[in-house]
Amino acid sequence: MAHILKKRGISPAQILVFGFGGMILIGAFLLSLPIATVSGQPLRFFDALFTATSAVCVTGLSVFNIGATLSLFGQITLLVLIQLGGIGFMTMTSLLYMMIGRRFTLRDRLIIQNSMTQNSLNDSRLQGVVQMTHDIIVVTAIIELCIFFAYSTRFVPLFGVSRGFYYSIFQAVSSFCNSGFDVFGVGTGLQPYLGDPVVYIATMSAMVLGGIGFYVLLDLYQWLHNKHHRLQLHTKTVLSVSSFLVAAGFALFLLFEHNNPLTLGQEDLSIQDKASWALFHSVSSRTAGFAAVPQSDLTPASKILTVIYMFIGASPSGTGGGIKTTTVALMLLFIVSIIRGREDVVIFSRRIDKPVVLRSVAIVALGVLFVFTAIIIVSLIEYTRPITLSDTIYEVVSSFGTVGMTSAVTANFTDASRAVFMILMYGGRVGIFTFTMALAARLENRNTNIRYPKDRIMIG
Image: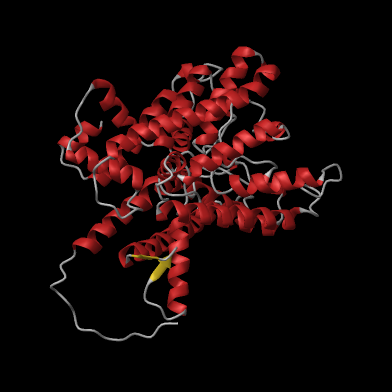
C-alpha cells in the first residue's frame, strides 16, 4: 500500500494517514465476515469498523464482549490489528521490505523517520532509521516474549495448555501495545487476575515499556551496554516526566479513593492491596486502559485526575496515545520561562529550539480544541438520553488519548456518538501528529524575507 501511495506522489504525512486508514478498513472487512463471530452471524459493519479502529489506534473501547462474541479467527484478526497499530504502519511495511529484500529509498527513510520519531526529536538526519526499525521489531518481540512467559506461568495452570498459551500471547501483545483488550469473555478484563503479583507486575511492566517509547528503550539499551554512552536529552525528559506522573498519580489516587467503599474503602482490602491498585491505575490511566475497578465507581476527584492523565498520555514513539509527556513538559516550562521573564526554555542545562517549544503549545491547544468540540457534539447527540456529562467527557478523552477506559458502557452511546469516538481515536493516533508536521514544515520553510509592520494588542 505504501508503495502505491508513494507512486501517486502523496506526501509522507498523507502516507501515514492513509496507511492507518487502510489497515482499519481491511480489519473492519475481516471482522464483519461470518467466520469472525462465534454465532456465525456477521457483525454490523459499523460495529466491525468501530472495533477495528479501536484496535489499530490501540484504544480498547468496544461495543461488545470480545472474548464471548468473536471467534478464534476474529480474535486473531483483532490481535494482528493491535500489533500493527502498536508498532506502527511504516514499521510493519519496513519489515516486509526487509523480508523481500527491497532497498529503502530516500523517501522511504523519510517516511520511516516521521512515523517513528513523530518529529519530536527535531532531527533531520535519515541515517540509521532502517536499523532503528529493525531494532524496534527485535525489542518488541523480546519484550512481548518475556511478558508471554510470565503470563503463561499463571494462565496455563488456570485454563490449560492451549487456552493458557493463547491468553498469554493475546494479553502480552495487548499490554505492551497499550490496547486494553482482553479475550477472557467474562466482561471484567484483567481485574480478577491483578491480585496475582506475577500478572500484576507483568502487565504494569508491559504498559510502562510500551508507553515510554521505542527511542527511549533503544537509548537505555545502549546506555546499559556501553559505559561511554550518555543518555539523550529526550530519554532523560521522558523518564523524569513519566516517573513524576506515576508517583503523583499513585499518591493522589490513593488519597482520593482510600475512603470510597466502592473501591479502596472496602474493609477486606489491605494497605498493600490499596497501594497496588493506586499504582496500577496511575500507570494504566495514561496508556493501556486496563481497569483494576469499574471506572463508574471512582470519586469525582479521581475521575477528573484520570481524564487529565488520559489526555496527557504516553511518550513519543511509544505505543500509547495522548498529547505526550514531553509535549506537556515543554509547554509548562515555556509558561514558567515567560513568568520568570526568560527567553529560553531549558531542560537539564540544554536549551530547546523555539520552534519545537511552539509546536508543543500548538499540540496542546489543538488537543484541547479537538476534545472540547467532540464533547459539545456528543452532548448534543445524547441530550435526550440518560448519558451524564461526566460519562461523555470520560469517553471523549479516553477515545482521544487512545486509552480505552470508560465510566459508562460504550455500547450505550448511539452510532452517531460512536462515529465521533472513531474520529477521536483516529485523530488521537495520527491527526494531531500530522497537523504538527505540516505546521513544523511551515514554520521552518516560511519565507523570512517578508516581514509585516509590528503593532500591539492587549492580552490577559
